[in-house]
Amino acid sequence: MQGKALPGFRDFYPEDLSLRNHIFATWRNVARRYGFEEYDGPPLEALDLYTRKSGEEIEQQLYSFRDKGDRDVALRPEMTPTLARMVAARGQALKKPIRWFSIPQLFRYERQQRGRLKEHFQLNMDIIGETSALADAELIAAAIDIMRAFGFGPGDFKVRISDRRVLRTLLLGYDIREDSLLQAFAMLDKTSRDEEWVTWQLGGAYTGSGQTSRPIPRRSLIGLEPVSALLSSLPGGAQAIEPLRETVATLTTMGLGDFVEVDLTIVRGLAYYTGIVFELFDTQHRLRAIAGGGRYDRLLKAAGGPDLPALGFGMGDVVLSELLKERGVAPRASIELGAFLIAVGGDDMPWVLKLAHAMRDRGIAVEYGLRHTGVRKQLELAAARGAPRAVIIGPEERHAGLAVVRDLNAGTEAKVPLDKLLNGYFD
Ligand code: HAM
Image (tube, rainbow, N blue to C red; front, side, top):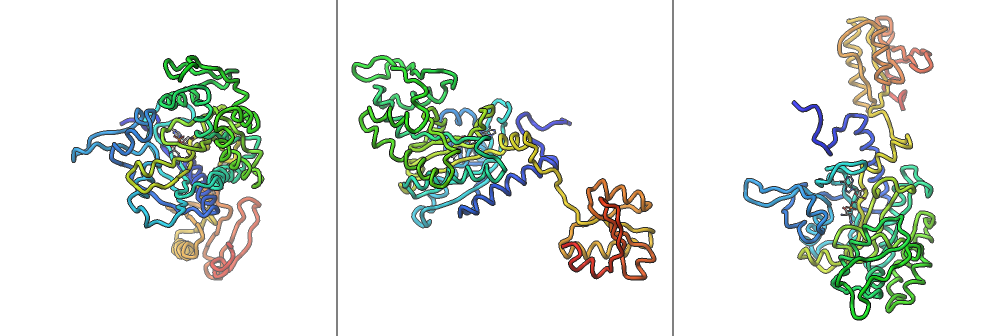
């Protein structure tokens, strides 16, 4: 028998699961505050849902196989194609804009490294049916507020925002041919942050006279003002930058300006994005992106559905867990007992059983020793289980309808009537 899970897959021991539950609860809480409804889909989909639409990178990472019914299938590597399929199937029947969220487990055959596994859970929040930049700002604000809900501030992470419409205008203005844009995007996505200049090595990708790449200083691609200045000199530039400007202005009005940075070197690896794209990073940029998303206005139509604009983001649990553990804000206990019940002698056990059951019926978490031992041993077990109190029943207490409640932290004791224990004592 193998001692470990497959490489890149995780066992969730109780302390790990309590962190995961904390992450899910925070995600659900903020999604609810933003008025998003939860949905889910199947973990296994038809293979062709992912080929072509998601892009080459994800295609190479698919867990795919032929099933016993001779269907080519794949474990879902991302949620967006499933969402597009589900919305396309209901078409016009759904009320717009749709505001949905989901927490799927996803599978990608990636080389395992820090923050990157072969499976992860990913919060997805998407809005479908809205072109306004208010929708872009709404989703970015939700991503920021999730991080704030975990206790992170502007010193801990930043959202880098870009726009593929701006990038398109920029690259066309730099004489790159329309049919080479995707290739140029991919190249920009891979350029190092340490390089002072951004250049494109794209043989034969240039129009007319400009047969070579004109380098752009990296600093003119970062910050709204430098980017505006760069764009204003290009045809269509002033118009192309409007949605980005509006999104940043909206976030600033919300009081979230400190979290946001315009950065045109953000492109995103997935093929379907058409407008604003963004990624969340820890400020030191030590880990992979915490979250990423953007607008994908043409995917629904391509999925055979209605021609609806759409946008969303995904936030993974892996990088987030690393950050939470580093800061020591991860919760530890996975159970919180109200009390540990102790029978002084074997004859007291029926009373303990009755009381335990009545307390559980009232929603109080209690435990007792599953084999009878001496009181000292039971008190040790109570402390080991992290119980704040022991409720002790002996012959004397039984006859008086009482229990001794010992505060295991303070070491103090009080006699408490049984009916009081059941009614309000633990509230
Ligand atoms: P993505 O950038 O591929 O986007 O993934 C989003 C986030 O999921 C990443 O920033 C990262 O935190 C986490 N993640 C991705 N792959 C792994 C992995 N192998 N191990 C650990 N964490 C990982 C998407 O998937 C888009 N479908 C998101 C989206 C939703 N766009 C619009 N709506």
